[in-house]
Image (cartoon, rainbow, N blue to C red):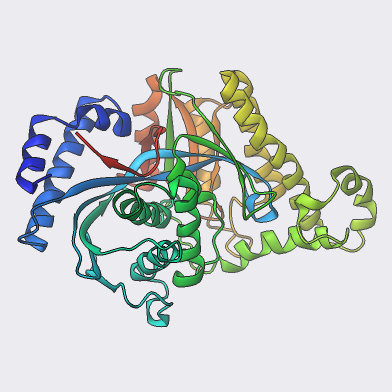
Length: 428
């Protein structure tokens, strides 16, 4: 579409059906998104004057629902795409270069004749772009190039996987335009993980990219990490009378590396006692029977974290089955069991190295005080600092948000909805 045509269509509400699918049907939110896209079109036009033919793309952030710290032991997780996303205005060309400008960041320029790892790009967005392109190039996909301007609602450090959304966005742009959509959501996710691991230099799992790319509720079994089992589920919490809230407790992640590393290391130390590398390969009954012996050779915390894995691995699947059956009572029961296990066995609510900094326990306590002691609330993501997650009755949404933001600041509580699709091109 011509740039002027896109602007007119946005102003006239031509993308209304897709906007409702991505962002819900609240008039205020739809008006905000309309302005957000129009502003992005204006920024693109100023950054890339003369580019007339453009397309619109979107890729979502994600939230972990169940399976806390199970993926690195080849376990099961349940996660969902959310309505916070990264969007792009894109113009394609045959100049052999990708120029991508993100709001608030300098422009990245990728020469498509140089797709090998660039050490100076480690930890930078350019590495993610180059890595994704390299994966498509290995498939034999010929990429001419494009100019893009992006903006993101998936704030970095929010625990909603901004980097995965960005990787999926780039993959979706390339796959849709240059590859006729042949790679598809699963391969795009793998390309994103590869870019993050090899080019960016971060040893991440595949969950974040997979959920962002596939969309909706996704139950993933990592028993074979190279070919994970993926089952997509549909459930509308809004229709059931609940919204999903994620609150950023504003805790610093500085100095927490040892805490994060310790969880998989301790779980693997238990697996090693059975001659295995990962807990998924250990017989659970053998583990329970061996606890008296393990107590003499492994740390108490390692034993409890292993116990968390075995229970949590089942719970992720049970939660998915409950949603599939529409059994909300069962889902919340298992969700609360997961929350208790993370607190009592996994022990990732705060760092033992920073015992006075307990933003996550404080937020969980405040949530229960606001919603009632039976509230469905738990640590979100890796833990130790960062975010919590709560399913909040619609009638208490405003009250809950005000309670959280009185503690952690305005804008700290995200009211989310589950997005049914992953990375897409918006078409009228």
